[in-house]
Image 1 (cartoon, rainbow, N blue to C red):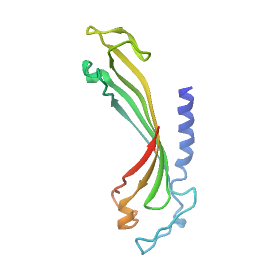
Image 2 (cartoon, rainbow, N blue to C red):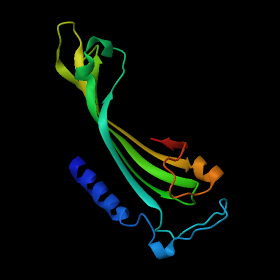
Image 3 (tube, rainbow, N blue to C red):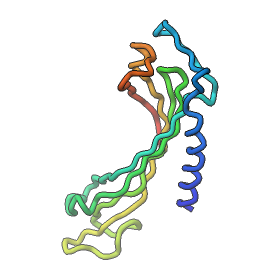
Image 4 (cartoon, rainbow, N blue to C red):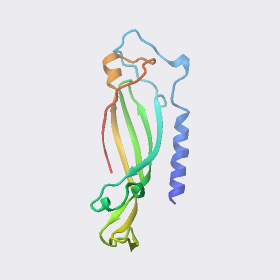
Length: 158
């Protein structure tokens, strides 16, 4: 079931990848750097994906080595720039966490180590929505040749 859900998420996000930029003839450039130009609904969507490792810091986790606590991490998001300075994003973060615990719990291994601690391994998930503010575009105006943008965000999640 998890594999099917992940596959469907990738398929749905792949459809958005084709609608990321308007055609050249639709791009509107202005000499006024603070003029706000909004586009059609299907313009300015973005999809991001990231992966790596994460480490869980719990009460008894100092008893295990860092290498045995590393677990896979995945971030997938879909968002839209409403204006050049304001955007929204929906993101999934998580996969697994590993560590050690004092007692036998539903997500721990049945065999304690030599010090009496049990390995634990469990799935993690964080789904959150964010409000994005591109300060570079808000102050300096939109420039497509800008090398980097400063984009802080705030949001809520579960």
